[in-house]
Amino acid sequence: MHDFQYRDGELHCERVALSRIAKEVGTPCYVYSHTTLVRHYRVFDGAFQSIPHIVAFAMKANSNVAILRLMAREGSGADIVSGGELYRALRAGIPPSKIVFAGVGKSWEEIRYALETDILMFNVESSDELRAIDDVAAEMGRRARVALRINPDIDPQTHPYISTGLKKSKFGISAARALDEFKLASSLQHTEVVGVHKHIGSQLTEVAPFVDALKKVVALVETLKGHGTDIRYINIGGGLGITYSDETPPLPKELAEALSPLIRDLKCVLIMEPGRVIAGNAGILMTRVLYTKEAEAKHFVIVDAAMNDLIRPSLYNAYHDILPVREVQRGNPVTVDVVGPVCESGDFLAKDRTMPEAKPGDLLAVMSAGAYGFTMASNYNSRPRVPEVLIREGEIHVIRRRETYDDLVRGEAIPEFLR
Figure 1 (tube, helix red, strand yellow):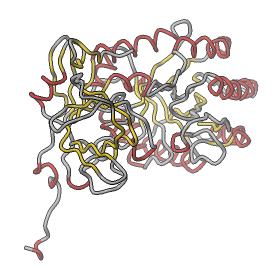
Figure 2: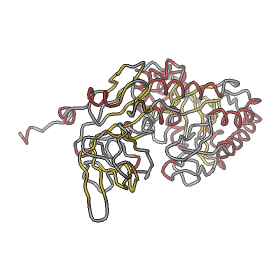
Figure 3: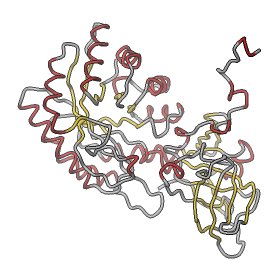
């Protein structure tokens, strides 16, 4: 459920016409619904109310500080994967006690920053990383709380690029080595083992992979507890999918009903890392048609948004519905490629898409773009990154301004010998 609906033939975000946003802010731009973000967070959080839990919003999905502040006000923590994300989380007011640090390649500087901040825990991915964290903690005279990320070898049935729980994945520690790695972690003087972590992939549309993976984790936790290791947290990661096209992913309530009984008697706090399921359908990318082009084999709609603004179609061949901002009847629908100005054949937002005929000047809404949209944007072709807008109670809030050409070269310098 989201708050982008047609009213009197025009697409609105909540009560604000998208054409008004385009007039005031320009295109392309990202538009987010405050109402949708809040509702999605509360539905997810409320689904697990029967057991102790922490929702750690996956910042890689959407890291704008205004969105993070909204999450913090709702009680959310953060799942981070870099020092930059830690900085953003703290800037937004997310408590360090609700921050978990994941990722396979944490630098010593990032580890030090996280220990200084006293985050809840690190999700550790390898023996080398475990020793590095212990070494940094020793230098600082501290103890680092850690959870070991276990790779349960479960096929999440999603795109290979966002599948993270198989044996061939770079993520996590194999289940076969788990006990040895926990033994190593427990032997380190400046490391405190507090949890087990797993995350098997993103955009999952079935409950079964979550259940299968958690069963393996629960069995491991029971074994560890039997050996005297005090596991206090079970982190099940994120990955619950959304509807982009015709998917029918489970509701958070269905996920909670399937998972809660498995951990209720373990006396552990459940940590979850939702991102897409909260932000995905809460945002759109609005773009304007520049030209149409008839080629021998294709009909192209050329828009002012490009792969540098939303890379998911090019990177994953992902589907995003594209709707006209104004409902206009212009004869029969046509099959087109919706493409951008970037100088790459892979620059497209849709291929072979049947949609109403578009004309130069028309506004289009690329739906379900609130997650992994702006966070994956770049300045390729020296294109300034687009603004982000948050709509609340009929008001337009620009939460990131459009970049300028000056922004493109900020931080660059011409050495003296070239002057």
